[in-house]
Image 1: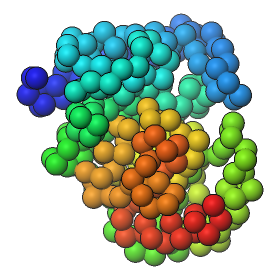
Image 2 (image 1 turned 30 degrees about the vertical axis):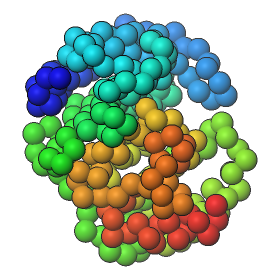
Image 3 (image 1 turned 90 degrees about the horizontal axis):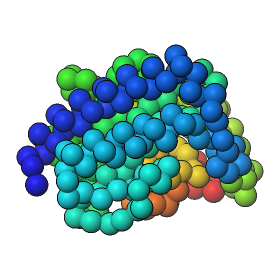
Image 4 (image 1 turned 60 degrees about the vertical axis):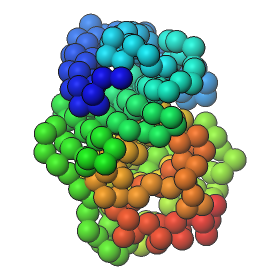
Length: 263
């Protein structure tokens, strides 16, 4: 395997090119070519073309790697090194012209995420982290907040859009957070939400009905920025467990208490 720092450098360059391709596609109105994968789950030709571009580029960077991709450009396979790719996290935002969507990529080594990168397209902010080496926004080191009390916190979440069996519990939890925090925000991109926790714009984030490619890259960035990641039970089944809680660590117990009370 090549040196991890070489992989990171080349991947950062690749995502800058991918961002350019997304912006060009938006100008060319390619986002109008929309189809429905499942209830309220959109995909565009841009998602598919960017994913193909990323798979080709990442294969060149790390030829022995395998892939787990949202749009199934390649067959999902496990290997010593596996890339987890979301070409556009926040496709619905992209389709409607709402400026909050990102490219999200993680690299797993023997099932452990060792590198995560999220490139927010509109603000041109590149969040990234290497396991054990901290988290960065572009080339500046970032960290989570030091907020100790929910009453001083800003919370992010994602509304359920296709799994409604837990809807009542979710709205009850949301009501509790509304009463106990400074406010709640919903951007429409879990990858961006996680990065905003990592850089201190949000104090906590929770959501369910998620896929690995939604959270893999951002989760490492949060932990390397000093934060904490769990599932709703406080355990570590967040990558494939379809639910995640991210916080500055100081608020994690209080956040989980509200979630577990209702879920």
